[in-house]
Length: 132
Image (cartoon, rainbow, N blue to C red; front, top):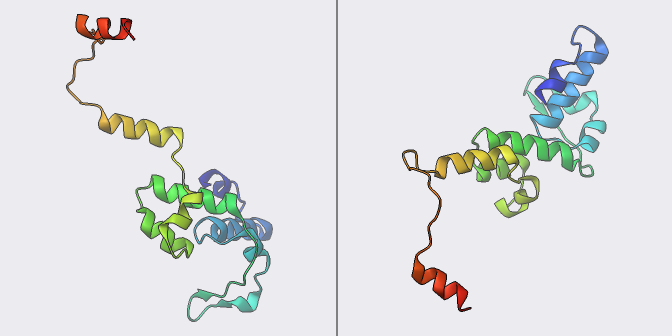
């Protein structure tokens, strides 16, 4: 997402529009259809609020935003609140562990001073397996 935001030319009107749309999608978790239905009078500049009309799913963008929060260490319950879900279970469809996260988890679970060696089964275990 950071790469997409960085490529928006914010010196032009179109670039500013594109940047604003991407921010609405990623940082606020709006669905693409919700962004498409926004009108200027939905913005309240005094209150600093935005009225969002119901729209259809924008799963990929919401998934990306939720995963970025998860990777940043945000608790799943907080992500559920941010997405407007009533339960963490609903949020699970947007979250999954990617390969980087799995590698980080494995690094945390490996003993730091353990000496790695090949497993050597005992004769008793080998007999047991042979008799199966």
